[in-house]
Length: 100
Image (cartoon, rainbow, N blue to C red; front, top):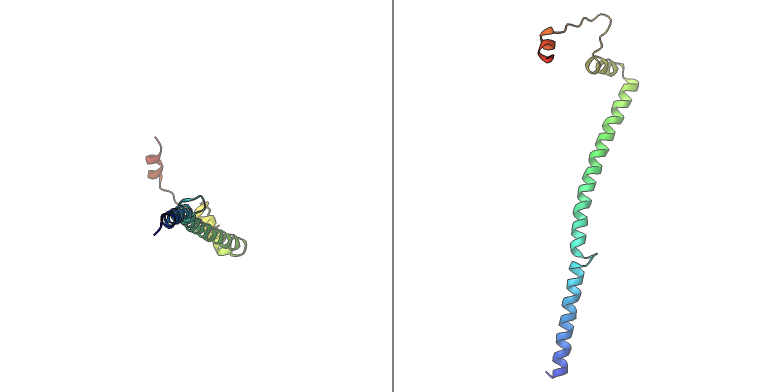
């Protein structure tokens, strides 16, 4: 090989190495792509969880609008209400333990 051919060969190898380095490590390179893909997976999972929570809330709102048995259940268990023919007995020993 002549000196010019050797120099051209080394310059082309150097250019190829620089281009590969830029492809992998540049701002929009392969490493950034992998990081963004990881973030995408996390965000999609969060979106799925929010969608499930929204669906659950929509079902609860629908039940509160239409299902009288569910309304009674919520009133009784979450708001300590009772029907007309029910008696509620409270344990006073629990109150003594909670008060200072």
